[in-house]
Image (cartoon, rainbow, N blue to C red; front, side):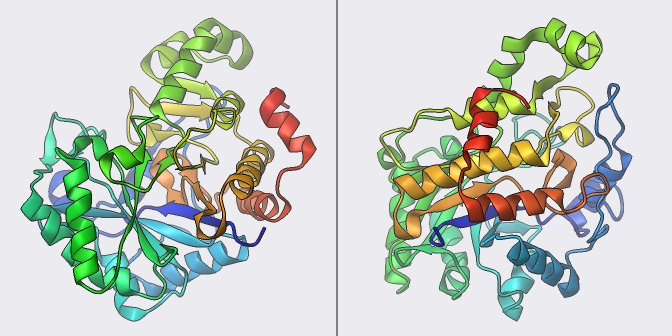
Length: 375
C-alpha cells in the first residue's frame, strides 16, 4: 500500500510578474480574483479564503516550506508544478526556479506543461489572446533542453528511473508523436535517459497515449465531458427544487452536484491503455468568470474521501511499483475553488480526509456513498 504516490497539481501564480502587472494591474496575483469573488445564488460557497497559510507570496521560501510541510503531514507525495513555456519565454517561473536552485523544500516534484494560450477569459482559447503558443520542432528541442536541470534533480518524480513529464493539451501539438521523439532523443543524449510522458485528459479522453508516442494518460477532474453531461442530465428544474438555484444562475453557468460528479467519474470503465486516476476535492471557477463558470456544489470532506479511497484502491489493484500514481486536482487552485490548502470554512478537513483515504484504502461504507448515491 505504501507504493502509492499521491501527486497534487500546483499553481505558481501567487507572486507578481510584469505580464500580469500589464494586463490586470500593478501587483496582480491570483489572490485578487479569490478575494473579490461573491456568491451567485443562496448557499453558494464564495469567496474561498485561506486559513493556515494566509495570502502567501511564493517568492518567500518560508511559504513554500510551509506548503511542503502540510503536504507531507497529510500524505501527499509531491507536487506537479504547472510550467509555462511560450517559445523560449517563461512566465511564473520564479517559485519553481527557487525550489530547484535552493534544494528546498525536499518534497518530490514533477512538471506539467500548461501549453494553452493565455487569454483575457482565462479559458486557453483563441480569442483575446494575451500570450500565444506557436509550435515548432525547433522549439520542442529548445524547450526540452531547458528542462534538463529539473530532470536531473534527485527530487524529480520518476517511473522506473524515467522523469515524469505531463502535457496539459496534447491535442494542440501539431505532431505530438514527433515532439515526443525529439524530447526522448534529447533526454537520452543528455545522459538522463528516457522520459515518462503523460498526456492530461483535459478535453479529449479515450485516446491511447501510445498512438502519440506517450506512455500514459491522467484524468483531469472535473473533466469537461463529465461536467456537461451531468449538468444537462439533472436539468435546471431538479436543481431549482433541490437546492434553490435561480434559473438565471443555472443558465449562465454549469452547476453540478459534487456527488453526481464523483459517481460519474469513479464509475468510468478502465481503458486498455494506462490511465492514472484523478480526484478533485471541489471545483468552482466563478472567481475568475462571472458567467460560464463551472461550479460543483455540496462537496464535503466525507464525499471527497470516499472518491479518493476508491481511486486509491483501484490504483493499487491495477498498477505496480512506480506506476502507482494518483493525482489530486489541486493543491492550491484557489480561484477555481479547488484546493487542499486549509480555508476558513473547512479548515484542514480536506487534508485530513486525504490522509485517511490514502492510508486506509477504500472502506465499504465510502464505496457505497460514491457508487450508490448522495449521503
